Length: 540
Image (cartoon, rainbow, N blue to C red; front, side, top):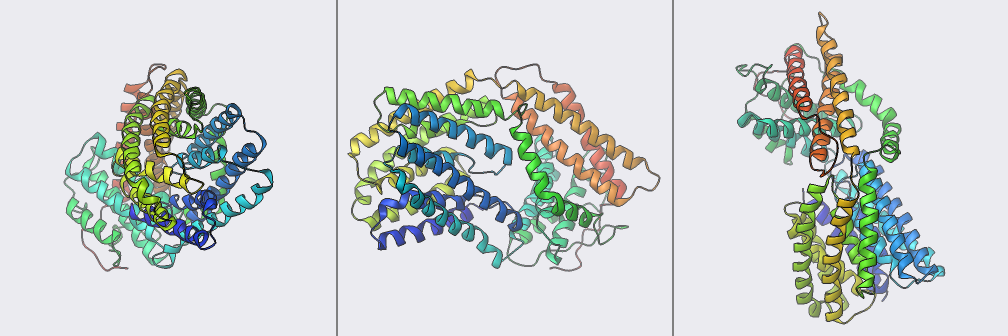
C-alpha cells in the first residue's frame, strides 16, 4: 500500500503549493507543508477510526507548530531554541508511541517543528501561519478519507488479505517466526474489523475469512489436527488473499459447521467497542504517559540525544542545527539494537541524499515551478521507497527536506551541503550516545506484565473450554483476548532482548507461555468447529 500515502502527500502538497505560487507567496510553503505532511498518517486504519486519528494528528501538528513559532518569535538564543526542540522531540516521541499512531511516527512532527524553530518569525505572524497549517491539515484530512467514497472497506480488506497470506506462509513453513507473524496479522485483522463501524455484507465475508485463517493456524500447530481435510490449505488461502486485496468481490467461504451467522458474538463485541472505543483509547494513551510507563525511557533518550545533537552542532559552527536534532530523533526505536541499526541506515541514506540534493539543486533553482516539482517528486519517492528499505527511502527524504527550506530563501550551496553532512554525523553519533546513556530497565517490567497477561488470558480460555457445552461467544472472545496478549508478549520480549543493560529476562518462561498459549488457541478453534469445507458458496 506504499502508493496510498505517497499519492496522498503529493495531492495534499500540490494544491496549497500551486495556490501559493499563484499568489506569489511561496515563502509560506513551510507552514502549509506542515499540514500537508499529515496526509502520511492513518492509511492502515479503517476509515471510521482514520477520521479521528488524522484529526488528532492535525491538531498535534498545530500545537507543535504553535510552540515552535512562539518560541522563535520570542527569542533568538540558539541554546534556548535547541532546548525547546529537544523537549518537543521527546514529547512527540512519547505521544506517538503511546497512541500507536504508526508510521511515519514522530519524525515528521520533529522535522517540521524543529525547522520552524530556526526560521525568522514575528509574534504577530503566528496566528496567520497557524491558520495555514490548519487549512493544509484539513485538506490532508479530506485526502486521506476520500478513498472511502470508492471502496469503504479497503483497509479491512487489506488487513484480512495480510492475515490470509501470513496463515498460508505458516502452513507452508511452520515455525516460531512464521507463527508469530501469522498470529499478529490475524490480531491486526480483527482489530481493523472491530473498529470499522457497522457490519456490511463485505465485512461479514471478511470476518469469515479471518476465521478461516485462524483455522489454518490451529490445524498446523500441535494441539490442532494437521490431518483435518477441512482446514483451508495454503493455495486456497493465497487465492482468497489475492481476491480480497483486489477490487473484485470478496470470496465468501461457508460458515463452519455448527456456527451461526453472527460469527461467535462479534456483533456484540463490535457494539461494545464502538460504545467504549474512545474511552479505551484514552485509557491506553494515559497508560503510555503514566509515570511507570516503559515508553518514558525511550522518550528520555530522545530528549538527551536531541539536546546533545543540537548543542554539539551549534558548537561546531552550524547556524541552524535543526537537522542534527531531526537526525537524532529519527534513530530512537523500541530498543538500543534497533536504534543502532537505524543509525547506520539513516547516516548512509542522508549522506547519499545530500549528494542527490547537490545534483538537483541547480534544476530546482531554475524556477519556482521547478522547485515545486522537485519537492513533489522526492516526496513521492520517499514514501515509495522507505517502507521497502529505510536507507534508500532516506536518500529521497533528505533532498525533499532540504528543498522545502529553499522556499524561504536561497543559501550558498556549499555551506548548505556542508552543514547537512556535519549535522548528519553529529546527530547520529550523539543520538546513539543518548541511547546508551539512558538505559531502559523498564523493558523487563513490560515483559513481566505481558507474561502475566498471557497467563490470565490463557486461564480464561481454559475456563471457557472446560464447560460441557462452551458458548461460541465466550470461546471467540477468549481466543481474541489470548491472541492479543500473545502478540503483546512477543513485542515486549523482542524489545527487551534488544536492550544492552537490564535485569535478567525470563526467557524460558516466555517460551513456555507462548507454547501453551498457542496450544490453547488451537484447542479453542478446534472445539469451536472453525474448520469448514474448503469450498465457496458465493461472493460479495
